[in-house]
Length: 199
Image (cartoon, rainbow, N blue to C red):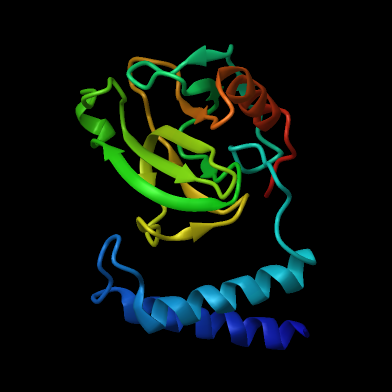
């Protein structure tokens, strides 16, 4: 595909996305415009990257920015979700660590500094993979504007942005529940913390 063809496909994709602005229903599917935009997105991705993203990616985009990883710990309020905190400055992009389906949103506006029912600050996104892993990604200041429940994401797709924690170090908390048990969940989130980063 030439640069001119890529640019035309990108413009067409954005036009389709714009048409969904007033007609998309959360969790109910995106309709024909959303489907067309997603098809074009996958064609561009395949052309530019030579295929789908790798199996696992580091959850903070931009390899030029320093990110510290915290210790392995269980997610408060979600037994079996083993997690690592990715400590970095607010505003950095958070990406899907693995391909999957956005199954749920939770949380609250991080500016009020109150936790939700399980103790999480900021917005949260749950992603379910075809292999049965459930990711819980929280402390988002905002979600990516076109992200919807029921939408498929690829590893490395932008899902949100690190929130300003105000009275705590800024970070995103990424936890994973494994269908194979806690030992595998610990191994999986550790592998995510060592996976390659995307731009």
